[in-house]
Image (tube, rainbow, N blue to C red; front, side, top):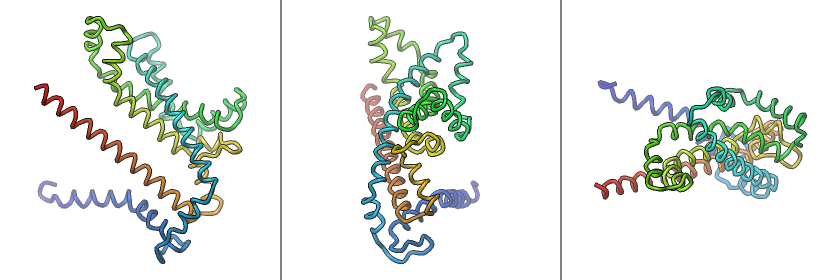
Length: 269
């Protein structure tokens, strides 16, 4: 590699081409005037106009956003508390750690069948928003615990002890010392929970009821019934663009925080 640096550059280009060429072609095909996805015959916004007139898309999007936000909030609160609880040694901590980590390795098909049987057959929860919310919190919780716990385990407990020595109550010490230190991890866990809920197809397909179809399930159902239509291509392009925009905003905020922290450190010196 040192003698031939162009080899590394070529490999990187091939990897990015393999990852993003299908997405780029999807975006180009969404502006195609023809219904064909194999050839480009002209530029048109026809499919976006037809997508805007489809009320089912907006209903599914509204439900998906509500479900993802509710799931992210509940998972973040419970997962953060669980991460702090696992910080201390107590009998059975290893067992609780394993149980909270199981959803990370269990196949989604198995989880979907299990949740369908538990929520609907045993708990009597009807198919729809309630069952979807319970299921999304159940599989998003593990990701929040893992992310927040990794930050909590590396946190210096002497900072909290110093706050207590200076007269801060446990709540004040948590609000002014602990929470700012773990805030980036909590935000990352919330983002994970939101995206997992927003993108889920397999588990949601088992628990979707009448009038409670999420956007990914709607896209999958339309593609499996009628094939990949131009409207679905346009919708997929918008979803990719929204995800990329959120990613750019997140990177920008992280860079701004890093520059701000560096400036504060220079002023302190």
